[in-house]
Length: 330
Ligand code: SF4
Ligand code: SF4
Image 1 (tube, protein in one colour):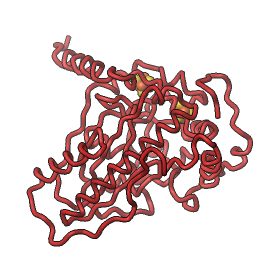
Image 2 (cartoon, helix red, strand yellow):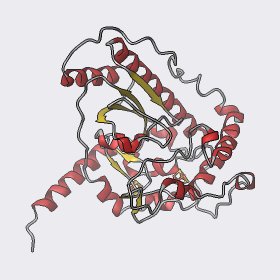
Image 3 (tube, helix red, strand yellow):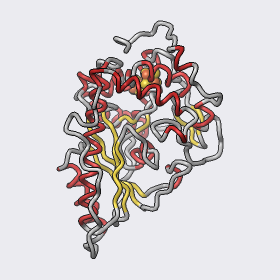
Image 4 (cartoon, helix red, strand yellow):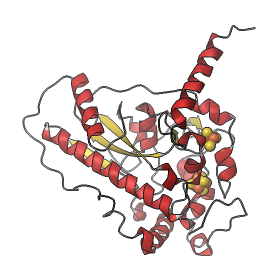
C-alpha cells in the first residue's frame, strides 16, 4: 500500500492494467450523454455483472490478504444481523409526518449521525435492478478525521470499513424497527452497492451539495462521513435539499484537484447522463484506488472535512449567498 500522498507520476500496477476491460468506465457512467438515464452498475456489484468485475476482484483479493484489513466485516462491532424478521401484521397506522419523525429519532438513537428522507426517483435505480418501495431513508455515519487523514494508508481504509459496518448496523436496525410496525423495509450498507445509487438520494434528502471530488459536502461533517440506507413502503414525508454554498466554494478551490495522484479530478463540470456536475474520471481514479486499497485522499484533504470546520464554513457561505442576493443590480 502507498505510504502517503504523492503527486509524483503515478504508474499503476501492471497486473491490474492487464485486467482493464476494453470499454472505458467513463462511457459506462454516461460521461457526455445529454439524455437522462439510469446508472449502469460499474463497481461494488456482483463481478459477473460488471465490465470491471475482474479488476474489482483483484483489488478485493489484495485487500483481504492484508493482515491489517482481514475480517473487517466482523470487526468494529460487525454489521448486525442479515436475517430480517417477518413483517408484523396488521400494520400500525399513523400519519406520514409522525412516521417520518419517529423513524428519524430511531435512526439517530441507533448509531446514525445524519438521517434524511426522499421519495425514490426511478432514475437512481441501477439498470438490471428494481425498487418497488416508494421511500428511501438515507443515513450518514461520521468518520474519525485523524484516521481518515492517513489516506491512502491502512488506518484510513480501516476507518472507512468501520463506518460502513456502523452504517449497515444502523440501517439494519432501522429496517427491523420498520418491519416491526408492519411495513416492508430493506437495509443497504456499503461498501457494496445496493439496487440504487445513494449519492443523488442523499442530496435529495438534504445531506448537502456535491463537491468537486464527487462526494457530498455536508454542513456538519464536510465529506468525512459514509452512507447507508433503508428503502420502505412506510408512509413518510420527504426532506428538502440543502444548499449552503459548498458548490460555490468548490468553484474557487483546487485542493482535491492538486492532491489526487492520478489527476482524476477536474476543474470543470461535465454532463453525465443528462446532469451537469463535477465528475471524477473513473479510468484515472480506479487504478490508484485499487493499488492503495481504497485511496480516500480527496475527501481527507477537503477543507470541509476537518473537525469543526464545516459548520463555520457553511455559515460563512450562507451569509455570502444572502449578501449576493441582496446586492442591487448595476
Ligand atoms: S477540496 Fe476544495 S474543490 Fe475539492 S471538494 Fe473540497 S472544497 Fe471542493
Ligand atoms: S479516490 Fe480517486 S479521485 Fe479521490 S484522490 Fe484517490 S484517486 Fe483521486
